[in-house]
Image 1 (cartoon, rainbow over the protein chains, first blue to last red):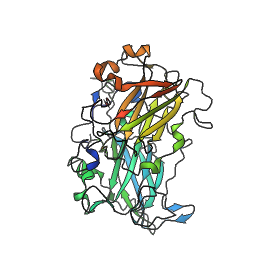
Image 2 (tube, chains in turn yellow, orange):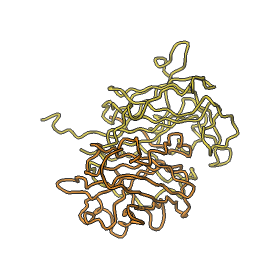
Image 3 (cartoon, rainbow over the protein chains, first blue to last red):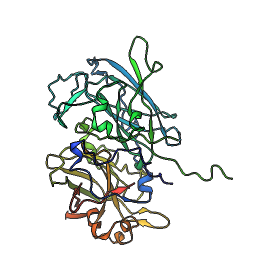
Image 4 (cartoon, chains in turn blue, red):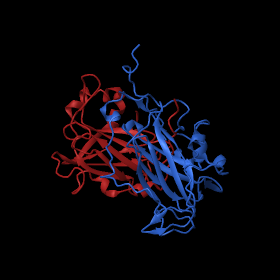
Amino acid sequence: MSYPPIPAGAFPPMDLPSYGSTHKRHPDQPPVRIPHTLTETSAPRFTPAAYPAHADMSRHNGRAAMGERIILAGRITDEDGRPQPGVMLEVWQANAAGRYHHARDQHDAPLDPNFSGQARVFTDAEGHWSLTTIRPGAYPWRNHHNAWRPVHVHFGLHGAGFAQRLITQMYFPGDPLLELDPIYQGVPAGARERLIAKFDLDVTKPEYALGYRFDMVLRGRLATPMENPT
Amino acid sequence: MSLPTASQTAGPYWHLIDFPEWADLTRAGGPNAGVAGERIILTGTVTDGDGAPCADAMIELWQAGPDGAYEAGFHGFGRCATDEAGRFRFATLKPGPVPGPGNSLQAPHITLAIFARGLMHHLTTRAYFAAEPLNEADPILALVPEARRGTLLAQPVAPGHWNLDIRLQGADETVFLDI
């Protein structure tokens, strides 16, 4: 088995002139294409037993974090729409004030002792996942004059093959900062809009929290020539 | 059919998912405690196109066990943050040879994935072990131009201690693999 190459138009380029940190970090040489071996088609086995899930960032040590509680939910499939069970999602984000619980984040916004900003969840047999958190705040960065990151949540996905490993960011609908953000805009049009979650009344819980849906697609179209013999 | 979800940079604050103990795959109480094999240290320094250390990178390690099998008795995953000098350090067991395409055999190797601020998607490379006889017939190394092959060869710096530096850009740039 092997995974097909990432289709053109799906991923951002490594060299993004508008995003300063890419200038000295993108390789000059093209990567060497290799056939997929067991090294690429197998992947670490992550289980809730060894990697405990915690799906609620809105509380920490029994105390509620400040900000607007929200629910995020979605489904993970592959390029052919097959659900991806057992995917481990690692999730991290800034707090409601736009500050990360991180030593290097010196943005002059308050830390919230009741918000750690990190979650871990797994997809079920149908590829579904969900978590509860606080809507993060926008924050400034030094990429250019008056630069602000749109409100976003980081997602890291571990699939069934190491070639599927993915880290991405989820954005919120209607954010005016999206059109100004080089990291979001670096993704080709048509692909970038799919990084924006959708408000979803079915995910919303009455009297509790608004819900947003964020579906993700892992690369992969398993070659199964025996499936449809002709 | 739909496009795979776009990659985005891990950014400078990914340490919220850093668990420093994951850099030691042989740790007591860890998933591989008690697994027999040759214990090794793998270190390296990540630098950018100016030769400046990348002090905010996340390195993920993925490897087979000493028997050459993936996830069959040996959990071959690790993660390490680079320090202020751009250095990473893993403790693990040396992997065995892994089956390759056809009837070929891959030399012992460790896959490294590099995530960082400024990397729109992660970079993937392999650490092979210098002077390993199986390297000569490795089907993946054979695809790498000979002049650049050395960037994939970890060098022994002390008994059981191997080092492989990663240069993201410029002269002697590391060979990254399109997987």
